[in-house]
Image 1: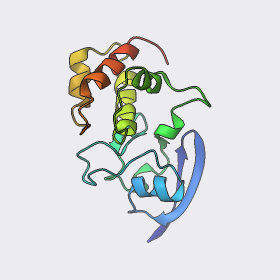
Image 2: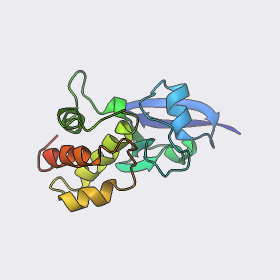
Image 3: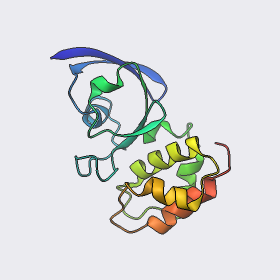
Image 4: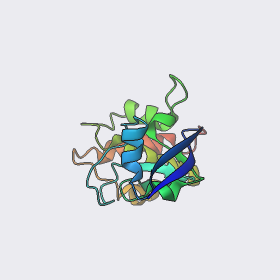
Length: 155
């Protein structure tokens, strides 16, 4: 059944008339053209589709668009401020924490939430917090180093 769904997307109020059970991932990609959020496994396991909903990392492939009604959604496209990358995005670039880059948006969004919740996060907490984001290219060490480099800084 079609319903009207209002939410804030990357700081802007949006309204969408759609089936409420459509997955947020496909709404972001198809309806809003925000293709940074990736489809990986489709089962919420790999983390390629992570976006932030009300300051929580969520798997957009498992989240229906009706679940974000009235909430704030932040995607990788909304993290930078104009041409200035967010510190976590810059850290991933500086530490070559990308290889193929497919998992990177989900990794960055998950790391963003971890750092928002605990700006002075330890290496062990980073490893635990990132363990459900899978990188098939094995850039895990550089990913952890990138997140560590931002820990303790404001941004």
